[in-house]
Length: 376
Image 1: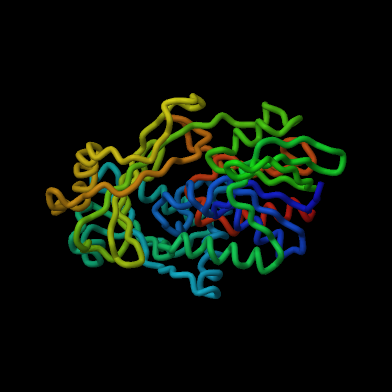
Image 2: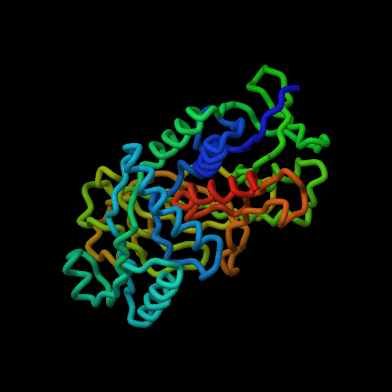
């Protein structure tokens, strides 16, 4: 049986960032990915927003990873030629009773290290975005948008140049400790046999499947695996060009940041995501990525709170994404779980649970944290 230093399960943006850091540290790394393409799960079904770090409790892993990851991402994209733009974001209150939420977000962001936030009056906000309707707004100049697939391709390129190997159509099946690390069984492509590979370290960056992967590690305690909660979000695209040059976000809602307006690098606008909860650990209903066009009715109502001139019939179904949550409806948003031996007591394992938004922004900082756990 061949052996390597590290096996990373999952070739989403977080798994690729981790593999890059470990390979650059001189370790022999294999990335095991179930699908035929990198980043075909959670990483390819989001808003592609670079978050500044406004929403997360002071001292949380989310806040730390987002603020540090944002600057790492911007610097990396500039060095590698990955398309990215600091377009800025306006968080808007559409009722006077929501204005206090803006100051809470501002204070939380400043405490986390986001020092460029500006509270705006209605007139100041409308001077920036004339089509906007609000009573007040919070401007975040450091927020932006990125080509997520370009980012993942660049991360993989660095990892492979440093010696990492990517194994596509190679689903994680099971693992067991073997005295010097882990014996990992990986499923081959259709019609091909499973194969085994040894590793000193096993990194679980499987996103939505992180709990299933952890449960398939012989000897890993079930008490260290948080319950999975599943929330799907719909996105709708705007037909025609948007009259906004910045991202527009309402004040947050239960389970997410509200139906916001984001832009891609070509200037095309999209709306979403909403929040559709499913049973936490049930095998069914099967979670598909079909878009329920009827949900656009609620989208129109939400968006017209801050853009009242949104035309009828201007939204078309775009795509859906599924968040790998570890907190359920009505519960406070759970922090990122980046659990190494110090947290769960099992040698040679790092488990990543609940890496939802701002996981894309945080990916490179998460990569550094996991690499520090592995290299000591």
